[in-house]
Image 1 (spheres, rainbow, N blue to C red):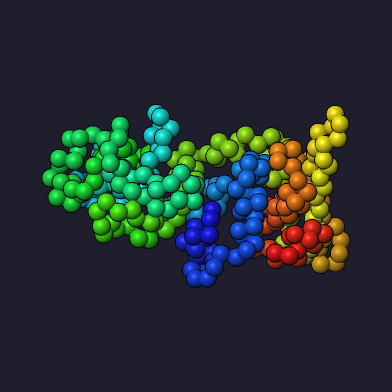
Image 2: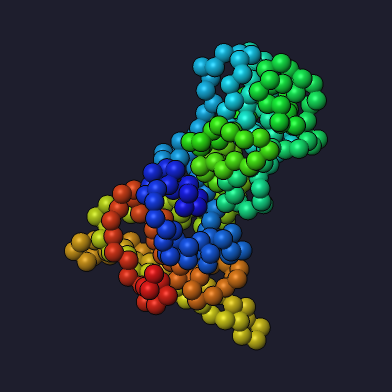
Length: 292
């Protein structure tokens, strides 16, 4: 999720600049090729109650024109499409959707343009009277299966100008993650690719609420002669009496290795083991993290 997604969820304020620490973590860890190590464990999953799926309004009568921003996952081709569901046919489990394309290929993209026409287009649909009267500027319409379609989480749902891009409240990355989790009723494929030890470690390390302090450390060993580079991360959790409640260490895959990334990994792994609504103090000897 990016900062606008967090604003949409009400987790952060709607005004003000994006903080430096968020940009730092995103650019140096989550947005890099190294992110394949841990990013998958932070994909939205069904247990994340703040990220409730956005469903279509099923109170709308069949054959009635009622546009709703939506995401469709074609089970046959495993293709995700964004658009506006215009008319629903609940008895047939189908709907007509106008096709929209993201302005850029960035996962953080929130702006979309109406598709000028592609292989999805069914020409006969644009000739329907309700669509012809209200969507004469749109060129691409296709049929979707209602059970494979969910709403796109956004506040500004109306299109006020033809041929101009519209910016929605949340990013493609956030919206598509929610859609995939809901429509496949399982974890994202990327999460299933985690090695069993790492996956089990993330799922099983749940610290009690009495945790007061978290000490983290990462180490990086550059490649030497025949030995490849390596990274490890570790954390120790202490309660309010200073007793060790739990500790963990992990050898990290040497994908774009660096000392900073091993330190960040230690912090992320420690935070992932905390229970919800935890309040702790993190101790690290990494000057770059301390300066944030």
